[in-house]
Image (cartoon, rainbow, N blue to C red; front, top):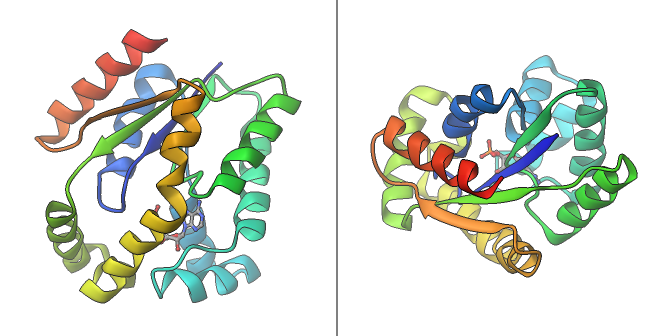
Length: 191
Ligand code: AMP
Protein backbone atom coordinates (compact mmCIF):
# COMPACT_ATOMS: atom_id res chain seq x y z
CA UNK A 1 0.00 0.00 0.00
CA UNK A 2 1.12 3.56 -0.73
CA UNK A 3 -0.13 6.42 1.43
CA UNK A 4 0.69 9.98 0.42
CA UNK A 5 -0.24 13.34 1.92
CA UNK A 6 -0.46 16.20 -0.54
CA UNK A 7 0.35 19.26 1.51
CA UNK A 8 0.20 23.01 0.99
CA UNK A 9 -1.56 26.26 1.70
CA UNK A 10 -5.12 26.93 0.54
CA UNK A 11 -5.06 27.43 -3.24
CA UNK A 12 -1.76 25.64 -3.76
CA UNK A 13 -3.47 23.12 -6.06
CA UNK A 14 -3.69 20.12 -3.72
CA UNK A 15 -7.14 19.02 -4.88
CA UNK A 16 -6.47 19.39 -8.59
CA UNK A 17 -3.13 17.62 -8.39
CA UNK A 18 -4.37 14.83 -6.11
CA UNK A 19 -7.16 14.05 -8.55
CA UNK A 20 -4.61 13.87 -11.39
CA UNK A 21 -1.97 11.87 -9.53
CA UNK A 22 -4.24 9.30 -7.88
CA UNK A 23 -4.83 7.32 -11.09
CA UNK A 24 -1.12 6.95 -11.66
CA UNK A 25 -0.82 4.87 -8.48
CA UNK A 26 -4.43 3.61 -8.24
CA UNK A 27 -4.99 5.47 -4.97
CA UNK A 28 -8.19 6.62 -3.27
CA UNK A 29 -8.33 10.44 -3.12
CA UNK A 30 -9.65 11.62 0.23
CA UNK A 31 -10.34 15.35 0.42
CA UNK A 32 -11.70 16.40 3.80
CA UNK A 33 -12.86 19.73 2.32
CA UNK A 34 -14.89 17.84 -0.32
CA UNK A 35 -16.42 15.52 2.30
CA UNK A 36 -17.42 18.53 4.42
CA UNK A 37 -18.88 20.33 1.38
CA UNK A 38 -20.83 17.22 0.35
CA UNK A 39 -22.28 16.93 3.86
CA UNK A 40 -23.14 20.61 3.86
CA UNK A 41 -24.99 20.39 0.56
CA UNK A 42 -26.83 17.27 1.76
CA UNK A 43 -27.80 19.06 4.97
CA UNK A 44 -26.43 16.35 7.31
CA UNK A 45 -25.72 17.12 10.98
CA UNK A 46 -21.99 16.98 10.24
CA UNK A 47 -22.45 19.41 7.35
CA UNK A 48 -24.44 21.84 9.49
CA UNK A 49 -21.68 21.96 12.10
CA UNK A 50 -18.80 22.07 9.60
CA UNK A 51 -20.21 24.94 7.56
CA UNK A 52 -20.20 27.20 10.61
CA UNK A 53 -16.39 27.01 10.64
CA UNK A 54 -15.77 26.73 6.90
CA UNK A 55 -17.79 29.82 6.11
CA UNK A 56 -15.49 31.85 8.37
CA UNK A 57 -12.29 30.39 6.95
CA UNK A 58 -11.61 28.55 10.21
CA UNK A 59 -10.61 24.92 10.61
CA UNK A 60 -13.35 22.52 11.66
CA UNK A 61 -12.54 21.24 15.20
CA UNK A 62 -10.20 18.25 15.38
CA UNK A 63 -12.61 15.89 17.10
CA UNK A 64 -15.18 16.22 14.30
CA UNK A 65 -12.62 16.10 11.49
CA UNK A 66 -10.72 13.11 12.85
CA UNK A 67 -13.81 10.96 13.38
CA UNK A 68 -15.05 11.79 9.88
CA UNK A 69 -11.67 10.90 8.37
CA UNK A 70 -11.59 7.57 10.19
CA UNK A 71 -14.99 6.65 8.76
CA UNK A 72 -13.81 7.64 5.27
CA UNK A 73 -10.69 5.48 5.48
CA UNK A 74 -12.62 2.48 6.76
CA UNK A 75 -15.24 2.82 4.04
CA UNK A 76 -12.58 2.49 1.29
CA UNK A 77 -10.68 -0.46 2.76
CA UNK A 78 -9.31 -2.62 1.29
CA UNK A 79 -7.56 -0.52 -1.38
CA UNK A 80 -4.11 0.15 -2.83
CA UNK A 81 -3.56 3.26 -0.74
CA UNK A 82 -4.67 6.82 -0.19
CA UNK A 83 -3.77 10.30 -1.27
CA UNK A 84 -4.85 12.62 1.55
CA UNK A 85 -5.71 16.14 0.45
CA UNK A 86 -6.40 18.73 3.14
CA UNK A 87 -5.72 16.29 5.95
CA UNK A 88 -3.91 16.39 8.34
CA UNK A 89 -4.06 20.10 9.12
CA UNK A 90 -3.05 19.98 12.79
CA UNK A 91 -0.51 18.02 14.82
CA UNK A 92 -3.33 16.19 16.62
CA UNK A 93 -4.81 15.14 13.26
CA UNK A 94 -1.40 13.89 12.09
CA UNK A 95 -0.89 11.89 15.28
CA UNK A 96 -4.38 10.41 15.02
CA UNK A 97 -3.77 9.46 11.40
CA UNK A 98 -0.48 7.76 12.34
CA UNK A 99 -2.25 5.86 15.15
CA UNK A 100 -5.08 4.74 12.91
CA UNK A 101 -2.76 3.60 10.12
CA UNK A 102 -0.50 1.85 12.63
CA UNK A 103 -3.48 -0.08 14.00
CA UNK A 104 -3.94 -1.41 10.45
CA UNK A 105 -0.18 -2.04 10.08
CA UNK A 106 0.06 0.85 7.61
CA UNK A 107 1.87 4.19 7.53
CA UNK A 108 2.25 7.49 5.69
CA UNK A 109 4.99 6.97 3.13
CA UNK A 110 5.49 10.48 1.85
CA UNK A 111 4.29 14.07 2.33
CA UNK A 112 4.67 16.24 -0.76
CA UNK A 113 4.10 19.97 -0.39
CA UNK A 114 3.18 22.28 -3.27
CA UNK A 115 5.05 25.52 -2.75
CA UNK A 116 3.24 28.66 -3.95
CA UNK A 117 3.71 32.20 -2.60
CA UNK A 118 0.85 34.01 -0.82
CA UNK A 119 0.37 36.67 -3.51
CA UNK A 120 -0.20 34.00 -6.16
CA UNK A 121 -2.46 32.00 -3.80
CA UNK A 122 -4.73 34.97 -3.13
CA UNK A 123 -4.95 35.68 -6.87
CA UNK A 124 -5.79 32.03 -7.62
CA UNK A 125 -8.42 31.75 -4.87
CA UNK A 126 -10.20 34.98 -5.82
CA UNK A 127 -10.26 33.78 -9.43
CA UNK A 128 -11.57 30.35 -8.38
CA UNK A 129 -14.20 32.07 -6.23
CA UNK A 130 -15.81 33.51 -9.36
CA UNK A 131 -16.73 30.03 -10.61
CA UNK A 132 -16.43 27.62 -7.65
CA UNK A 133 -19.42 28.96 -5.75
CA UNK A 134 -17.33 28.52 -2.58
CA UNK A 135 -18.09 31.32 -0.17
CA UNK A 136 -14.68 30.87 1.47
CA UNK A 137 -12.97 31.75 -1.85
CA UNK A 138 -14.90 34.94 -2.34
CA UNK A 139 -13.51 37.46 0.08
CA UNK A 140 -9.94 38.42 0.75
CA UNK A 141 -10.79 38.53 4.47
CA UNK A 142 -11.80 34.83 4.50
CA UNK A 143 -8.80 33.87 2.41
CA UNK A 144 -6.50 35.70 4.81
CA UNK A 145 -8.16 33.89 7.73
CA UNK A 146 -7.48 30.55 6.01
CA UNK A 147 -3.83 31.52 5.49
CA UNK A 148 -3.61 32.53 9.15
CA UNK A 149 -5.08 29.17 10.23
CA UNK A 150 -2.45 27.51 8.04
CA UNK A 151 0.39 29.45 9.68
CA UNK A 152 -0.84 28.82 13.22
CA UNK A 153 -2.06 25.23 13.05
CA UNK A 154 -0.89 23.51 9.85
CA UNK A 155 2.64 24.83 9.27
CA UNK A 156 4.04 22.97 12.34
CA UNK A 157 3.35 19.74 10.42
CA UNK A 158 6.30 20.52 8.15
CA UNK A 159 8.65 19.84 11.02
CA UNK A 160 6.56 16.91 12.26
CA UNK A 161 7.09 15.14 8.93
CA UNK A 162 10.67 16.41 8.41
CA UNK A 163 11.66 14.67 11.65
CA UNK A 164 10.17 11.47 10.21
CA UNK A 165 12.12 12.13 6.98
CA UNK A 166 8.93 12.04 4.95
CA UNK A 167 8.61 15.69 3.89
CA UNK A 168 9.48 17.03 0.47
CA UNK A 169 8.50 20.34 -1.10
CA UNK A 170 8.18 21.02 -4.82
CA UNK A 171 7.46 24.12 -6.87
CA UNK A 172 3.66 24.35 -7.23
CA UNK A 173 3.72 27.12 -9.84
CA UNK A 174 3.34 26.32 -13.52
CA UNK A 175 0.95 24.63 -15.96
CA UNK A 176 -1.20 21.89 -14.38
CA UNK A 177 0.57 19.11 -16.24
CA UNK A 178 4.04 20.52 -15.46
CA UNK A 179 3.23 20.39 -11.74
CA UNK A 180 1.71 16.90 -12.13
CA UNK A 181 4.90 15.67 -13.83
CA UNK A 182 7.04 17.19 -11.09
CA UNK A 183 4.89 15.49 -8.47
CA UNK A 184 4.97 12.09 -10.14
CA UNK A 185 8.72 12.14 -10.65
CA UNK A 186 9.21 13.20 -7.02
CA UNK A 187 6.96 10.41 -5.76
CA UNK A 188 8.65 7.87 -8.06
CA UNK A 189 12.08 8.87 -6.76
CA UNK A 190 11.00 8.36 -3.14
CA UNK A 191 9.06 5.11 -3.20
P1 AMP B 1 -10.23 22.73 1.46
O1 AMP B 1 -11.24 22.27 0.48
O2 AMP B 1 -9.19 21.67 1.75
O3 AMP B 1 -9.64 24.06 1.13
O4 AMP B 1 -11.00 22.92 2.85
C1 AMP B 1 -12.06 23.85 2.98
C2 AMP B 1 -12.39 24.06 4.44
O5 AMP B 1 -12.83 22.81 5.02
C3 AMP B 1 -11.24 24.51 5.33
O6 AMP B 1 -11.02 25.90 5.27
C4 AMP B 1 -11.74 24.05 6.70
O7 AMP B 1 -12.76 24.91 7.18
C5 AMP B 1 -12.40 22.72 6.36
N1 AMP B 1 -11.41 21.61 6.45
C6 AMP B 1 -10.99 20.82 5.43
N2 AMP B 1 -10.09 19.93 5.87
C7 AMP B 1 -9.95 20.17 7.20
C8 AMP B 1 -9.12 19.60 8.22
N3 AMP B 1 -8.28 18.59 7.96
N4 AMP B 1 -9.25 20.10 9.47
C9 AMP B 1 -10.11 21.09 9.76
N5 AMP B 1 -10.87 21.70 8.85
C10 AMP B 1 -10.80 21.24 7.58
